[in-house]
Image (tube, rainbow, N blue to C red; front, top):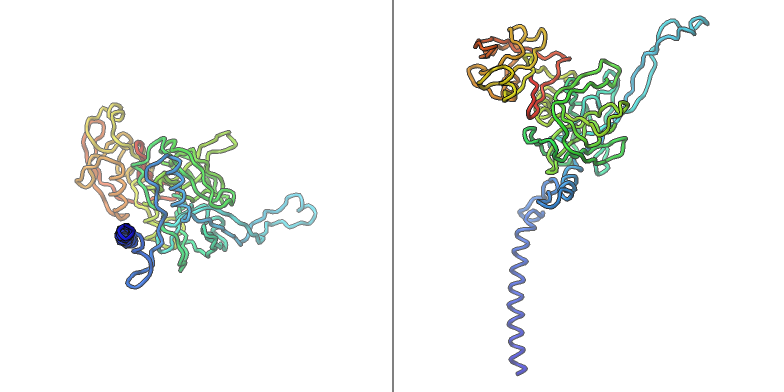
Length: 410
């Protein structure tokens, strides 16, 4: 009797050992395939996985964990000269009658995020062009505490975007995943990550509040204020130092670059603005193609603002077809010289039908300045053709930015 029980126990133990060994082999084959060893290479640095499903809070936390390592603090130190005007009162007592240049040192800070695996970091132009006529030193501070020297790669003040580059940094975090402006909806979660008031890796949460906003920002170096159009509005708090940091959705995808906030002296609260992601992708591609240019790459344009042809536009224009309506014409620009007017509808470009402002932008931005495009136009009930010579956007022309409903153009 004892012998029989022992034999049964041994057989059960043997079967259990076999099943356990097989389970461990299966687990190891699926979970440790990337571990360094014979025939294997070390796993590449990648973003943290997102938590699928669950509550909004859980998804926001997951998105922050995924993106935060790729957010960078940028410290900018300026060594330059400052013009000091003469003191009219002191001149009566033998003081200097002319202004003087005096050395000065200043600091600024902002945010940025990793854009590519070769070390390019996206930020606002106003963050790194502070005192751009002086000797500027840029330091990138990563989430792990590493401080790495960086250099200004290219900038476009008209779009308030710039590329900063770090070279030969082996621990570079993965690039932030790009989203799409067409998928951004009013009321969806918006998460801002950055360095407000030099408080590294700060997170604020709000919603997407609106599209196609126009805001004027004072120049960082005392120059002429710039007006930016087509901005994304968010209730996620954006404070000094947040500039240049990413605005993401709860999937961890970029939906904008934090830029500025409404004037707090006017009592506005919860009104921040970001550059839409589609504009970021377009402008960064131009900056990559023009390294060293700090006043913006030459941007092809014809000088119009546009809007989609919807039922409201059809009713106003008494128009029943498709195309893209011209909202405004830049005085003296190529479209103005070709006779285009607000209320005209672009039906075709170079024989190809167009139905969105994005299509028009893509065609124009892929045309070299100096080349001519043919536009089929509907104008107050009359069809006509216009030959427009593509030009280069002047410094004060607002960079085209596309919103889901109301659209600006090149």
